[in-house]
Image (cartoon, rainbow, N blue to C red; front, top):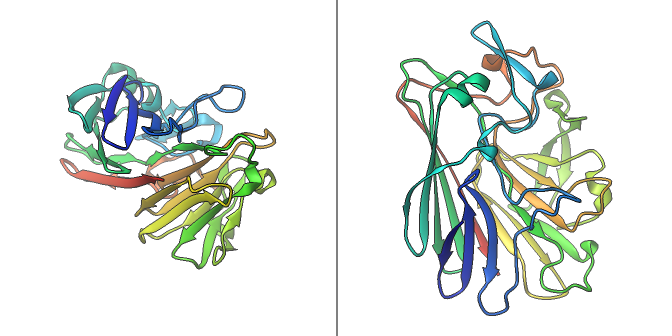
Length: 291
């Protein structure tokens, strides 16, 4: 486990999946990150690569060959190499090998960088295509935050999610685990969304952001603790497992979507897919402020 620390926060990152596993307030000992209780969901903040969400029948075709891959891809279950670490930053990397190529035949390099600055953790990812042919992929993140934060007597419904800019967003419905991009519906977020487990009876709320800078803030009236995640991405998911009464919520920056209900199974035509030119790079980032 890698540890980053400054005057305010102590952060732990697991090289397995390069997963952010803990963020604690140094003064109070408050743990902000979901602690992977398998009763509800056995992960903290997995990275999603080379797909986001689920494939129809857990398979896809590329260049005429069919491959099998489970939800969110394999990066979250792979050991990353630690390239660099100091007191407040760490850089980890995953590259293609025989095991990844059995699931995903392309060459790639995925490099992630965490930087702790005051009360904020900054995350950046780079996907490099070392090949002479295009790289087709998606990328995402899936950090989970404890609800409640710092007050064991508080309830899930004492918390709210404020989205800025405050406006009516287009939401991509999920039919089972699949995206229904042809039937987007408006979601009024001009006012904060009060958390309720029933909000997630049809899985995540997936908002279309069109790469506009957006901040999601988790807060309550019971104390001054919360988190704010700022991103610039095509989509963001807000999720808590249902019907489990899980004491956490996830804010999920997505550069991709689960297979559409009309998916053909061809990765090249998958909804919201990225096609990276030979020897080109893709960048993604977000920042989490803890208060």
